[in-house]
Amino acid sequence: MTKTSKIFLAISVAAFSLSLTEGGGDIGWGILRPLGAVAFVLFFITHIVAKEVTQYDREERGKPEEMKRSRTDSHKAGPPPGRLQSSTKLRASAAH
Image (cartoon, rainbow, N blue to C red; front, side, top):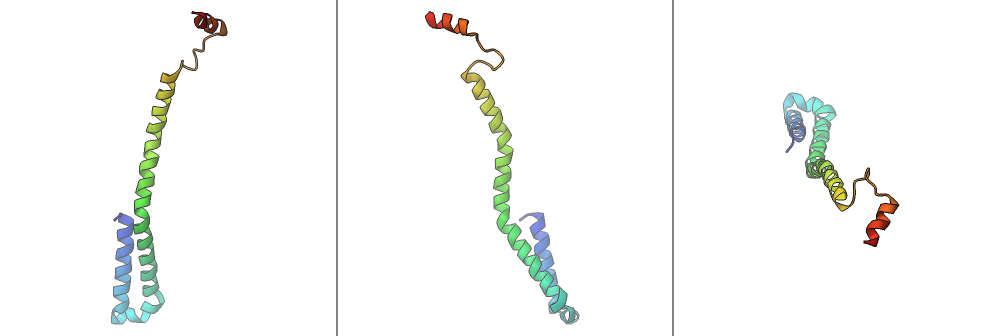
């Protein structure tokens, strides 16, 4: 669990517990129980989405490395972009 989801869970449990007490029961229906319900929904959403977010972060961190690898592979495949051979040199090398 992430820190955010733990905070939402703690708020949810605390708000619901306080609404069950005698003093909290008076204001519980107006503030504490809805606050607990909203906090629980936010906890549930962050808990479900956490795996997808970590997978997305891993993929995004891997993109620069993948781009570097593709650049080095393209340089190995042919001459560097700054050193193109002229057509006369290509004809001479093809004749040999």
